[in-house]
Image 1 (spheres, helix red, strand yellow):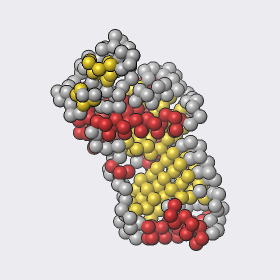
Image 2 (cartoon, one colour; image 1 turned 180 degrees about the vertical axis):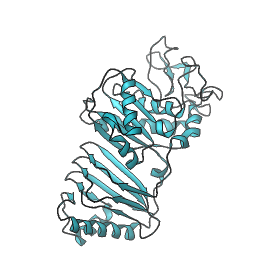
Image 3 (cartoon, helix red, strand yellow; image 1 turned 90 degrees about the vertical axis):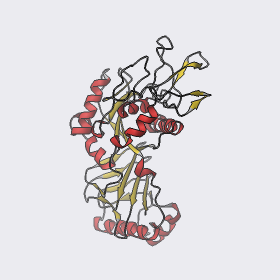
Image 4 (cartoon, one colour; image 1 turned 135 degrees about the vertical axis):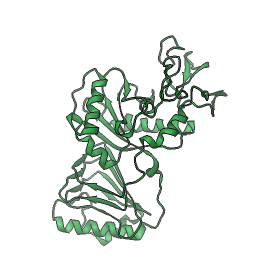
Amino acid sequence: MLLIRTNVLKQWRKRMPYLEKKSINTKPSPMKQKIIFSILLLWLGKSHAQQPCDTSYTTDTRILVAYTDKVTDPNPLKSMIQPSIDNMNLAYKNSGINHNARLVRAVRINYTETNDLMKSLYDFREGVVHGTGPFGQLKDLRRCYHADVCVLITKDGKPTGIGWEIGVNRDNAVCAMTSFLLVPRFTMAHEIGHLYGCRHEVALDPNNYPFPYGHGYVFTKLKDKQGHYLHTVMAYGSVANNGVTTYPIPYFSTPNLTYMGLPLGTASKEDNARVINERYSTLKGPVLREAITIDKPDLIKRNQTAEIIAIKQLNHIAGVSYTMEANSTTVFNLQVTSDTDRIILRPGFHAKAGSYFKAQICK
């Protein structure tokens, strides 16, 4: 199903009744389909682009998540990927962090796992940065979906999470984690926090690079029902809890807020919220690109998601296979500046029956 805007769905079906209702497929009758889609999207752009854009998608940190074929959960997007994004945004909001995370692509990759998560991260980075190895397709996907941070989820491995470095530039904004307790431990928020430059609590990690105020925080006067000291996202709490790692609360350390009446950090040592706010632009790519061109094949499989964000032009090259399987979700967001700006879909674009596709054009 092609969903442009629900309030005009009936109108464009009446105007173009020869569009398939069960599937959008430009493979048969290429010229006819090209004309149909060009007319459809131009009409929508001219008729409905006057409303202002929801510009949040232009400022969010865009995240690409790859998970291996060894992750056995039948729907990782629903059970662990989107909940991890939601948990991260909850912690950002609670902590006064001035942006959100946004999932722009979730993709399944065939990969032979080992128990060494560092090796998996190395292979992952080779694919993201250089386009080589088992994750080689991710370089083009990152470019197409304009992803700022790339995340790998495996079934097994030690340690359970690792970032490329503490405090990276955008090229090296990659991290890896296992699916074990991924959501309740805030693992994705934690590892991406390392990429920004955040560290663990001082008792576990006294290193002050790159920021002396960049540590997580452990409450020494506040415990959970099991008697464990509570701690923020970047801390482990293991030193205070005799080596037992406990679960975090949905906050990053900050001296500017309190939790149950107690400060969440100190200005000199524990202010992860400040680190993330200050380092936001380092990991963030350009706010929008002038144009996005779909010039490499992509297959959005069942229970996967994709979102392309562009300005002025979103151009699909004829003959390049871009296919959405049933129970997948794809959104094209285009911010236009004139009546000549458009989304162009050509032969090779295929939204199968049961898929959800939305082209959002705004000004």
